[in-house]
Amino acid sequence: MIRPILLPALLFLISCTQIIVTPPAEVDFKNIDFIETPFNIAWSNTIEWISMNKVNIENMDKNSGFILLKASGTEAEEFLNCGKFELIDTMGKDSVEKSAVANIFLKAMNSNSVKVTANISGKYSITTRHRWDGRTLTSKGHCISSGIFENKLFNIIKANKANK
Image (cartoon, rainbow, N blue to C red; front, side, top):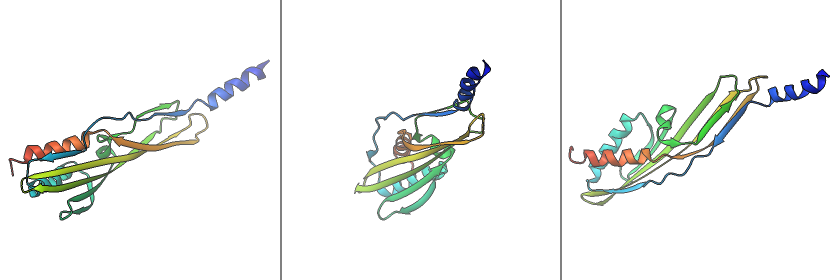
C-alpha cells in the first residue's frame, strides 16, 4: 500500500527544481543619432561618460571614431534586457551573471555635427543547485539592449555640447 504513494512523492521531490527563462521582448529605440556638436567635443563627452559609468574600454581609436566596451555585473545590468528569470524550488545558492559588449562609432559629418552609432548586446548565465539532491543546474542565453545605454550616451553628448 505504501509503495504506490512513495514513488509519485519521490518523483515530485526530485523534479521540482526549475529555471524558467522568459525571453526578452524587443524594445523600440534608436541606436543612431545626429548631434550638433564638433567631433572632438562629442569624443571627449563620450570618454567622460564611459569613465563615469565604470565600463571597461577594451579598444578605442579616435581617428576612426571607434570605441569597444565590455562590462559585467551591475555595470551591465542596467543596459541589458535578458528577459525574466524564475528559479523554482532551488537550494538558495543561485548565481546570475551578466556581461555586455558595446561598440560606439562617432563620425564627423561636418565641422559642427557628428553621427553617433551605439550598439550593445550581452549574455547571461544562471547557476543554481537542485533542492533535493544538490545537482548543479545552469541556463545560458543572450541579452538584447534595453535602449538605456544608447539613450544615456546620446543625452550626455547633447547636454554637454554647450559646456565644452
